[in-house]
Image 1 (cartoon, one colour):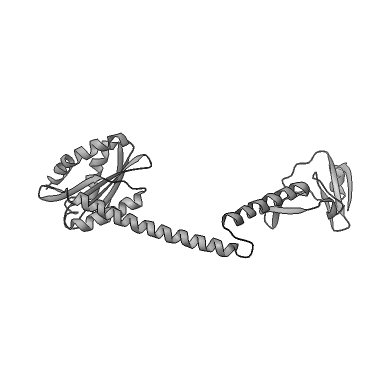
Image 2 (cartoon, helix red, strand yellow):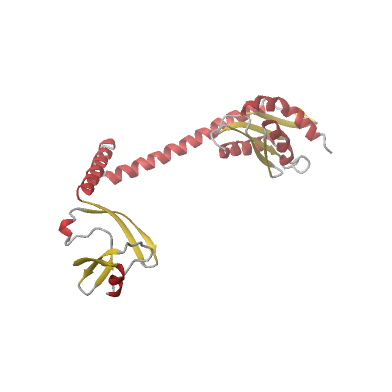
Length: 253
């Protein structure tokens, strides 16, 4: 490999290749490798790989059609990187009481156990949700001869609330159910209406009235609708107003 510093115009006349998109000064370095390659370059070069020392590729990506770019570290930087990786790996061995021969087996077992625990937690949540729904059912009221059940429930996400809504609708047989919860510092309301009543009293119409109290909006199907509001401090007001809003909605013929 040979290098020489020359004028950029002279370098191009000699057949040196300039990379598309790169910026060069008037004075450039030309790197030639026999008859194989002659390029303009402002980067660092070595005469043999021994000068580089340890070489660790960190990433590779595409920069143009048919052109790849690799990013790497060398020398003491690469050495320190590997030392940190080995230190991290040793810590993992220690935490899992494992070694290089059984580490994957240990991780697979841990993942499987975690999956089983999650499934068990979901089952327990379902049981707790059913108990909560049963308690609300015991406090149902009749409005215009329609059984109405409503209350505040504690859940972590809207999917769990929706599942509780399904359970409530199934247990109602005939009636209207409203569940209110605080999720991610916002009010979430779900309204369910059984199939025999949803045409006459669509859930979307009911929830659109409820959500106004907590400064929100929302809607959904005739048998189930969800809405969200930002005023968590108005949840108690909402619960107090639910019977009056239902009375108004159920008086519509």
